Every structure is written in C-alpha cells, then in structure tokens.
Length: 105
View 1 (cartoon, rainbow, N blue to C red):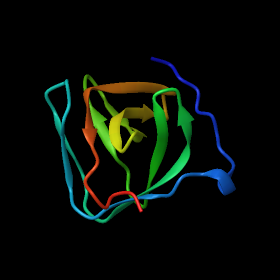
View 2: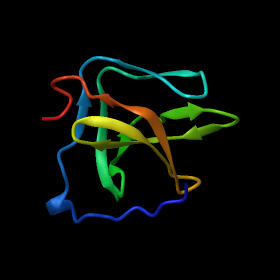
View 3: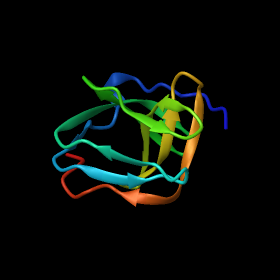
View 4: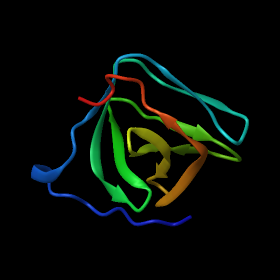
C-alpha cells in the first residue's frame, strides 16, 4: 500500500536499533531474510504502522515477485513490516516479529 513517511525532528527522534544477534524472518512470499548481527538502524520517520528505520552501511532487501530495498517498520518493540523506499510503499508481515532483547537501547 502506498504510504508517506512523516519525518521527525532529530531532537525528537527515537533511539537507534542495534541488532546484537541475527534475526531470521520468514516472509509470506516463502522467502527468508536475515537481519544481520551487529547491524545498525537509524530512525528516519514514521508511517501509521510504526517507526521507520533505515540501515546504516548495508542495503537490506526483501524478495517477492521482485527484489526491493526495505527499511524496518517497528511498533511496540516488534517488527510490523517493511517500508520500501523506492516505491514509497508499506509491506506488512502476517504477524509482528518481536525484536530480540537488547535490540533497542
């Protein structure tokens, strides 16, 4: 679904995400993805489904009929889905995936 990111001022932005362990994901498309250990994600704004986090120093993608660059959408310490920046679209997960303890500072 098409979405618009609301950008927050840096002074009011939430803390970055740091994954200390890999987080495996199984997508509805049947493909699997892995959020890598030691990856760092910064908040770039929000959509109605949650806060949007962009990866630092890596490109993260998801695969369906095509491969899409993807940023994380997080709400209540759980991954809700992905923001696809090139398409300005949101792709939801069937069920939210809890973030591992220690992911958020």
